[in-house]
Amino acid sequence: MSLKIHPDIASLSPYVPGKPIEELQRELGLARVIKLASNENPLGSSPRALAALSEGAATLHRYPDGGAFRLREALADRWKVNRDQIILGNGSDEILGLLARTFLAPGDEAVMADQTFVIYKMEVTAAHGKPIIIPLKQWRHDLPAMADAITDRTRLLFLCNPNNPTGTMVSTDEVELLLARVPSHVVVVFDEAYFEYVRSRQFPDSMAYVKQGRNVIVLRTFSKIYGLAGLRIGYGVATAEIINFLNRVRPPFNANSLAQRAALAALGDDEHVARSRAVNEAGMEQIVKGLSILGFSPIPSEANFVYVDVGRDGRTLFEAMLREGIIVRHIEGSMVRVTVGLEEENSEFLAVLKRVIQSH
Ligand SMILES: *Cc1c(COP(=O)(O)O)cnc(C)c1O
Image 1 (cartoon, helix red, strand yellow):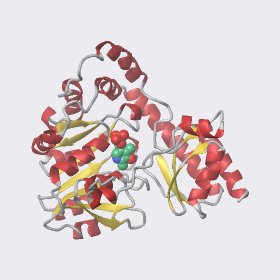
Image 2 (cartoon, helix red, strand yellow):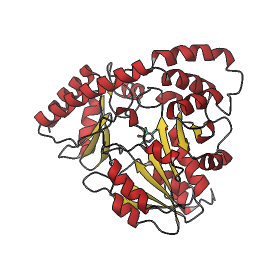
Image 3 (spheres, protein in one colour):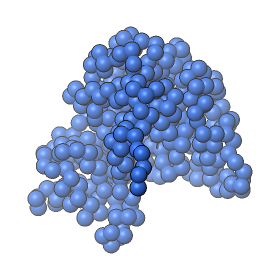
């Protein structure tokens, strides 16, 4: 009844995730549904991770290792940093929330792009910070404009690279110019959820900035190429000082025991990662080619999804495809994001898209 809700919270809308496969099957009585909506790995999880999960069942009555000793050790080893430079999250989403709560006092500013990952704005607003939104330029982060937007109140700058939903990236040279202009009271958040898919040699080595002791944090996740989205586990790498502050607001058992085990096993499964990259590369080529044959011009992507202007109301197209059992993501206006799937899923997507655009 007479709830007293802060206007910042009232201004938010609940996050709308990609429609789950089972839900669409229930709603439409469809036998076969193809989900290309949430940038998940179409090959599934690493088999090694699945084996580790069964072993983990024996200790589910115990709390997880709150310090995640083994996983942080393995990550420290992988990235050649110290264990105290790593934080785990219940998905890297959680770390975005920890960053907002740790670094933002009410009214403090966080610079971010539009369009970019929608969680930044949500977490900043929920922490009573002020999102400062800089439009993309030709679908890419406008780093000079983002640097111009920094003030004495700025505490965070979010750089989603490759960017979701556009799939575009910014290069080492561009990032160097940005960092040269960022004062030390601003933490630059390199959100690299799609890092393992990137092919470009111009992609910045953000871990090097961590090692230089700069105020940056690199976020990676086990949800995308490692195929563990359902377990919820991601990590951040930064200076020990930044990690120490984040640990003050981190819930003690935020990374569950199964997730820790599976992530550790997945991290060592280079073969699954390599196969996933190869499947993505071939699938990306297939989708981009198929879309251009249909007259569309998808934005060149470094990730495992493509962003495309479908030249008509994207919502209507999304719904028409849903009725045919294909789940894509309508982002806004005529823009739709499609995750690269397995070869037969991509073919089916292209066939249904063709039918849908011909009948509208
Ligand atoms: C998917 C994604 C994440 C990670 O999500 P988690 O599942 O919470 O680890 C983070 N940032 C971006 C840009 C993403 O697309």
